[in-house]
Image 1: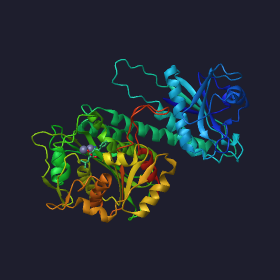
Image 2: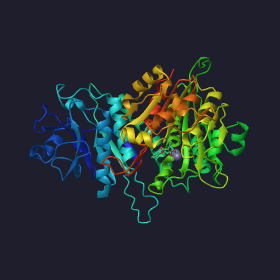
Image 3: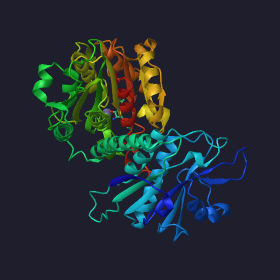
Image 4: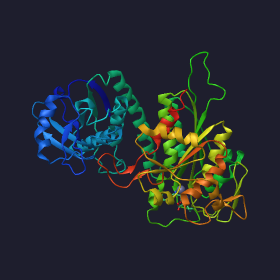
Amino acid sequence: MDTKLLFQDAAVFATPMLAVFAVDIATGKDAEPLLALLTTSDAVTDAAAKVLESGEFKATVGESLLLHAPNGLKAERLLIVGLGKASGLCADEVRKGAGTAVRAAKPREVRDMAIAFPEDHALSDEHLEELPCTLTARALVEGAELANLDYDTYRSDRKDRSLQTLTVIAKESEKSTMAEIHTGFDEGLIVAAAQNFTRSLVNEPGNVLTPTVLGERAAAMCSEMGLKCEVYSTAKLQELKMGAFSAVAQGSGEPPALIVMTYEPKLAKGQALAADAPVLGLVGKGITFDTGGISIKSADGMEKMKYDMAGAGAMIGAMRAIAELKPKVKVIGVVCSAENMPDGKAFKPGDVVTAMSGKTIEIINTDAEGRLVLADGLHYAKTLGCTHLIDAATLTGACVVALGILNVGLFSNDEATWDKFQQAIKSSGERFWRLPCTDDYKDQIKSQIADIMNTGKTRWGGAISAAMFLKEFAGDTPWIHLDIAGCAWNDENKPWLAYGPTGVAVRSIVEWVRSYDS
Ligand code: BES
Ligand code: ZN
Ligand code: ZN
């Protein structure tokens, strides 16, 4: 999509469809909705006045209403898009609203549209706190770009209804300068392209996206973006003594891929990063298909396990955005990719494997494979010099049971890193819920045979047992673990996002990395 930013009055812009945001300014619990548009254009306000008064439209998030031939406007259609209650409105509603606008246009075969930048000063301060304008611009662009993607590329009856051009129409004001809006707009394009790249990787079926192909896609992205990328396979895993990762990979005809992407900030001549500057390690679970291995999964819903590389996808996407946003901090992305299959060479329950760190692991269940590949990935990232670690993985069904599909499960061994993460992600609109991984849970993964075992003694708190396992390999290094099993796949079409991969965590990981910009 060709996305442009234009400073103009929305009323005089000729377009097949102009979208404008509406909010409910009524206060009080049971008050009837009282609607207002976030625009200072009188002509747009007049064109929408009658229908807003009618009560037919409530301006809830995800709701939209279309008017043809709106009076006094150059646009052929006016789409009014709800953002919900004015009080407490934040950029995330704008992200969803922009997505709703795009997804309302697509089935109508509208290929070019415009969205009026929400002007918070159209309302008095009593109704709406200020929307930070850079963040709002960014969220708007992200929402629109994310919404424009539909995962129907494998359908022969596909009709490409993607928008071709989107024009964001803004007005400069005391509160919003052109430069601020521009900054947000540009960042939005970068971050959304990265998140869409992640989504496209996660959408690929397991027969297309093997570990080798994931390595090729990552390498192609890195060469396009100017990142260093190394892709290794079986021999390197053996050389590094990655016994846990190798065990998972050995039951598949597809060779594993260890993908290492490095971003080094370019500093001005004479400048250097401090010797004790942080090095961030982004570690992703890249199981391109999880059958469960010898502890095979039931057939029901197994097809979805192609998304078991969503953590890897998130890290590859995040590296793409980092390469473009250029924060002054070194970042290393480590992806451990394999297929978990049950063939004659597959690892088995009862096997004991030795991880790269030297820890021995008793295999109880071969379906708990994600923690095994990450164990070696986390340890390897430390040997590469990472001082802070974050991992993302579709790790446990238990996390989905605990938190459902709206919150990512988050674990950390370090309060300062958790605080920093919380601060950094305020603008991402993604939700995380911290779960415990205190040492008293360690008993769960004690083995009689080896140092630890790869599942909990009981099935209770399964997401925690998995995190406790990873914590063994993070050691003293500040670490955050994101269990994205519930949030990486959207099981139903939303007004602002298509069915399929969500690209969750990309935006938050990127913001976390930027918070270390020196
Ligand atoms: N990839 C799955 C986790 C998963 C399950 C994600 C369901 C999304 C939905 C992971 O490899 C797995 O199978 N975990 C097991 C662990 C168990 C054997 C301790 C699980 O969650 O059942
Ligand atoms: Zn599994
Ligand atoms: Zn898995």
